[in-house]
Image 1 (cartoon, helix red, strand yellow):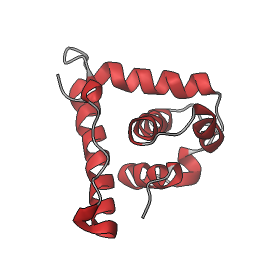
Image 2 (image 1 turned 30 degrees about the vertical axis):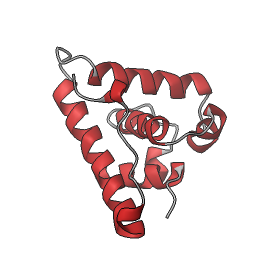
Image 3 (image 1 turned 45 degrees about the vertical axis):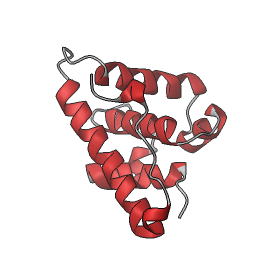
Image 4 (image 1 turned 30 degrees about the horizontal axis):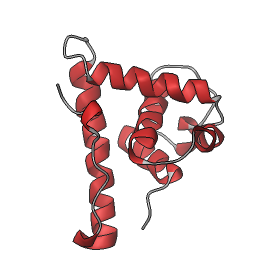
Length: 122
């Protein structure tokens, strides 16, 4: 099994118990917009794909992908942010699910996607 943007979107949608269609919709309503940002951050963190690929998957401009990535990243790096504990716990759980899915599909031979040092807990 190979990790793809759509697999990440499916995993995030499952984690938040929303449909993939809703997660990829044009809706700006909370909490869908937040869930979408988590999916964008996860894609940028785990995959080495161009922004244009993620723009196509999410049907958003590349600057929207970057904004989502930077927003989640800045919250994760700032323990004083009121959303720090919520965002860190949820993104860690999503990453854990992805690691487990990869391990279950490929066994211990494949190294799961690492959490980059700049996104780890402070």
